Amino acid sequence: MLDHVGVAVADAERSRRFYEQALAPLGIVLIMSVTPEQTESGGRAHGFGSDGKPYFWVGDNEAVGEGTHVAFAASTRAEVRAFHQAALAAGGRDNGAPGLRPHYHPDYYGAFVLDPDGINVEAVCHRAE
Image (cartoon, rainbow, N blue to C red; front, side, top):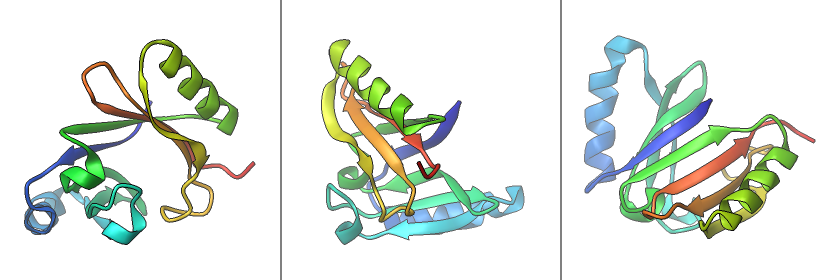
């Protein structure tokens, strides 16, 4: 199952304003914004969603990567680690070792790899362990 998707945009603030208005009729609202100081790569991003969970992100290339970011939901932190190991064995390039990312929330445990085309792929577990 997908956890969230991110797309790189030319201007994160302009896109934030657009999506705040465009997605409102669907009940999708701005849940959180991440500053350059809060990201590993130094970009700005905005997460939209519902029920307090952001699942659609727009951000500067530095925050999202060149193009697309796809995150798959993992049930456990062990699954996140297994994903990272399997993706590297399959030829992926490390883009963030398994670990906590508390700037998103205290139990955010993710791992990132770049696939053969450079797409940033993540597995994430939101549970405390």
